[in-house]
Image: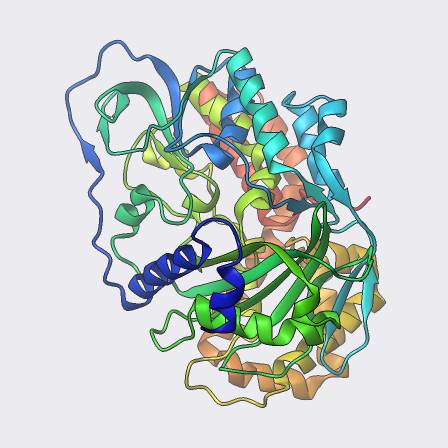
Length: 514
């Protein structure tokens, strides 16, 4: 019996079986053998008696947008394949990002405080051979998903939402005036919140293979020495198995959570999650300075996250909007999920509400709710610089050396540069300062990275970098342009508001330093 089998067999439930089932899914993604679903169809006959304004499929994060819309008076039905409930493992986020829950009247101040399970400071960023960097108030809040989802569920029902548990999504038929789901639920708009592996997303992408993957394994365990700090991004090994291993660690309510994650392409020869979990167990003692025998494992964590260059996803259907991970609107550096949904919750709530009010539910109109964002697209080059091709040869220390140099320069430039980046927000001014400073002080590293990522990728990145600057400028002048459309019709105003949102979020201007 392997060490992975030994430890996972001690946990309640079929954890090892779940790991291997996830590996089977991973293999089908890499080999591109999964059949393409046909769950969305079209019918030219109008529907009668629409019951809802919006149907949301996928409740775990769908409840966030569902509750926000229901509070604004939208008739919402939420379909969840099981029971809508949170998991035990906390979701990490920064405190100021949580203000949106109170602003949208989803939680009271008291409820928000109850939802916070853990809070820690400071957090570390460190790479092999470099100096440690410490920051405060970045992803240092652990939200209790069980309490949060139960509270939102109660609020959703209280304001008239309809929750259909144990109701998996089977099919959707798009009609000229609405959508019917599972031959039963009729609404003006269908929102897909079913995540990365949504059958709707799979059909829309038509078998496209992911451009990159992020594999994550970890655990929550007791027995660690008392440590009130965390790790946001840490590496203490050179390249191994053609992977650069990165670590995260956070205090948890019932122990300490540690993650190992790595970026890679979708080549079939790459290591799988069970192999990565074995690496995690091999390296964890050195990482945390403790023997495995001293730990009492509470739960195991594992998963993989596909990312696509063609994101956010543009679906070919009217009256259908992917949100969250279904849309691919997270950056290729992040795991998406809770943090990405919270960041865009206000924008999506007001945008969807306005789309319903003005009947802007065509493919073109809805695509503006998931716009091109250069602040996300520029991070593709960063992800590529933090990974290596399956047969590519680079110096084992190269990625660590690059990250050490870049983060040291960002630290010298101060928190306005460093902290947004650690929260997956890229801004033109901060990025430009970092590039100039790093290029001047470490030209040899820049030359190596150009060779590693390739000239084509670099030239493509330059376009998105330029667009980041353009979006920044456009958002700054948008208040003056507002006067030109103030007296236009409601349709023109809907398009204008979506443009301003795209400039704001696409330039990272939604982030305001404390």
